[in-house]
Length: 135
Image (cartoon, rainbow, N blue to C red; front, side):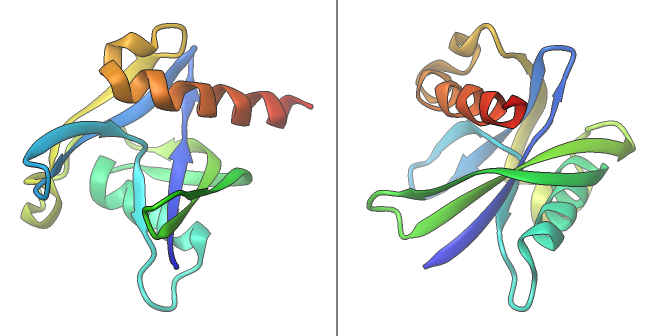
């Protein structure tokens, strides 16, 4: 089963999200920054690489807050609490990544409707993960 590693980066009550193009569906969707592990890579290394490639930032990878198998999707998502240590989130000028990224935005945690149906489905997951961290 494929492994995917994602960053949960929250600053001032806002969550960092990336708007990706999904060619199979010919549509743009919000998602967490991160992605699929490359061969020989650890989950933490994948988070570092993906955040640099997609958002042009270096991060400190904290604890894994959540691990979830997505039914019918053939992968497991791992969510890490992260903190930006260098850079400002911006779309890379690398053609390998910038053609599939339409936006990088800070989205208010108290308004999931900003991300449409995706936000309504995924923000409860984020809130559970963040609440578990506080315990």
